[in-house]
Length: 140
Image (cartoon, rainbow, N blue to C red; front, side, top):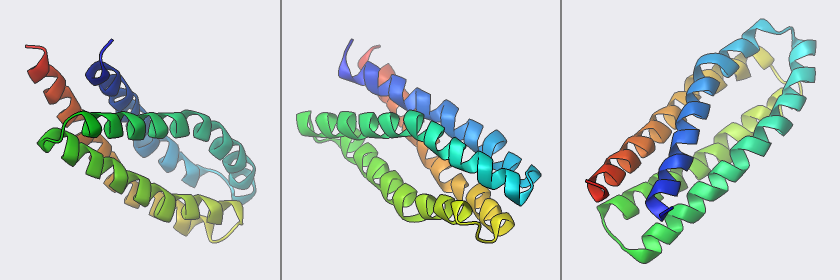
């Protein structure tokens, strides 16, 4: 298995995950009472981290290795997108999730999560499309 194929698999995993989060998980938060959301959210964040963190680390490492091997439009642009996703996730989304755990105005935070997550959804979708096109061009 080559590096481009592994990268495509990781990016495909993210596309499924981020669209599920955007269309199912974040919108469902609005249907919980505050007390139930607090209970569920603490479990949810621990469980989803087991899925998200390895994918994010894998994507970062693979992107770095690809960039280290060759510097071209594909490797540079995708690595920049990965870095932007890391910054957005840890500066915007982790604090939003932490504010839910603290019981801060939950409804407002849930709305912010859902609206702002479109940024990550679009970026991870773009990343997958670019990886897919790169993979096709290398294997045709």
